[in-house]
Length: 387
Ligand SMILES: Cc1cc2nc3c(=O)[nH]c(=O)nc-3n(C[C@H](O)[C@H](O)[C@H](O)COP(=O)(O)OP(=O)(O)OC[C@H]3O[C@@H](n4cnc5c(N)ncnc54)[C@H](O)[C@@H]3O)c2cc1C
Image (cartoon, rainbow, N blue to C red; front, top):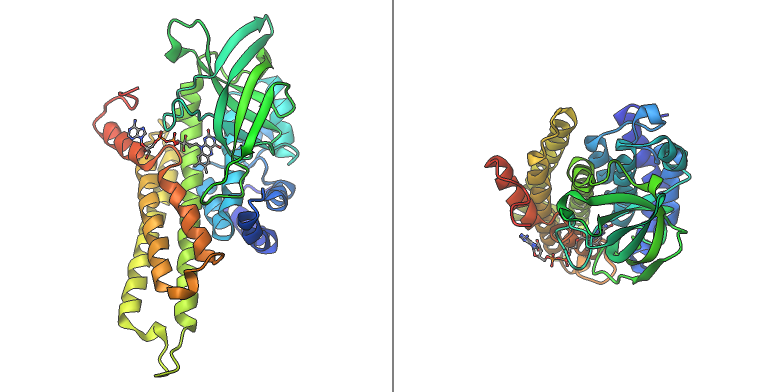
């Protein structure tokens, strides 16, 4: 079992070289869920990456998740977000786990036999992913009845279970009655929509989920009744921000590697000069590298602060994810220019990276919302002031 961060990162890198790299292009081109890559991480003991050691996991926090995500996304962003959603979900389940949930979900997760994912978003609340309209009614003493629809679920139809949010019906104070629960993939009444044909992030099986009279046992409710907002801001948001920030850093690094490779190998026969000898090109590469290094340092700093802070203050994570979103789009865009016509073609690595990077602003918490939350946190204003 791995407990040392550097050993974890080294092994992740090896799996990426042996498995993920070879799968990346087809995962994107064929919109194919990266089964082989995800299973390789589970098989090598990383299923419980974010599960505490006392429950059989590797006990890693947001910084390791960010670094793992960066390595994987350098090879394949789809694999990084699929594995990342599982890691976020595992941390959610483990945070207030019951004996039943430990046996049913956490043990198999740590054994690499169970994949989970998160279904919070809905069309009606969009970027306000913490506001479910999916309804949860008492069906009997031991069961709830769920009706509603979730949108954009990563690992949709591929995971063994999903963490779903819902609001209790007939509640006079709905804000206190938002809940999270586990739904097993095989539960009757769960229907998957078509594969979402995204511009980028095409191979992570993002799908809509329809819930019609889905019966959920009360032992599948996570934490206390009304805990959804606690999960969203104590586990889901920090771990998700870390995973996504790391993924975008990985895209940025991969783009810069493409630039370096192109510049180093491009020579003009008419004068025998290498592109790498141009001062303008050297200057532009230096500028790109600084953007990447600055964002990377910020993400590592923010995740370290978060993991060490007893109060788990989110402000640096909000700022770091917003910064990395801005910089990855600039970096990949500029990389496309620096690699010239060679890169400006369908199926080039930069084509994929550019499309994947563009999700950085729209996957929630979106960059707009993160900037607002950063300001509110600094001003000590309520985060959800306008909901
Ligand atoms: C590839 C992909 C995978 C995803 N995977 C998952 C998943 O696995 N699980 C899951 O639960 N969700 C997932 N999502 C959903 C996602 O995180 C968002 O909920 C969704 O993208 C919001 O989109 P929307 O079209 O409703 O945007 P809208 O809410 O319509 O937002 C449009 C724009 O308005 C801005 N905006 C909206 N509200 C505000 C506000 N109050 N203040 C300031 N600006 C605002 C936003 O920043 C955005 O730029 C995924 C999305 C994508 C694209």
